[in-house]
Amino acid sequence: MTVTAARRTEAWPWISTVARLGLAAVFLVAGGLKVTDLAGSGRAVNAYRILPFEVSQVVGAVQPFLEIALGLLLLVGLATRLTGVIAAVLLIVFIAGIVSAAARGLQIDCGCFSKGGDLAADQSPAYGWEIARDVGFLALAGLLVWRPRTRFSLDEILLRGTR
Image 1 (tube, rainbow, N blue to C red):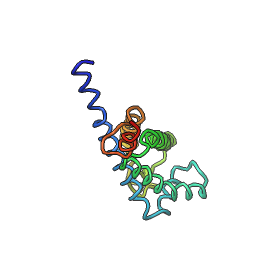
Image 2 (image 1 turned 90 degrees about the horizontal axis):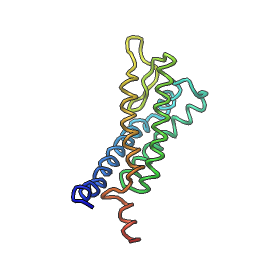
Image 3 (image 1 turned 90 degrees about the vertical axis):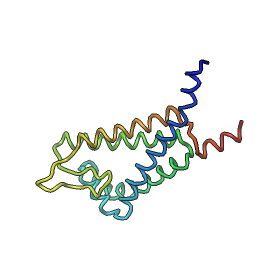
């Protein structure tokens, strides 16, 4: 292995660590902002007009806890590849929901980092920005699926014990 290739190999755990901690912050903030108003989170899910009202309420109540759980798992670096897969699936669902709302002409706030719901008549949605942002987050999750070895993680500690 050349010196350049060895340096590149040594850099991946650090790059993945930044991706892991960045994605952890995203999920912790998103879940934390919603967990104090579960009814509002349910209204945000219902604004997409995809699920029946009762199902939207359940999804809205569960979603903040799922986001916080994913954020905590990423923060401590436990089951990083699996957590990356779950995060990627969740982000694909979020992106699909935003694309669906845009395609149907809905005027809603995605509710990703806010209470969400229908926008006032003088407001316009930022679907392009929301989709681009979530695609970026999806790229971070994909990186963790591809390169799950990170620094300062429980995975690293557990793997060290098996070597």
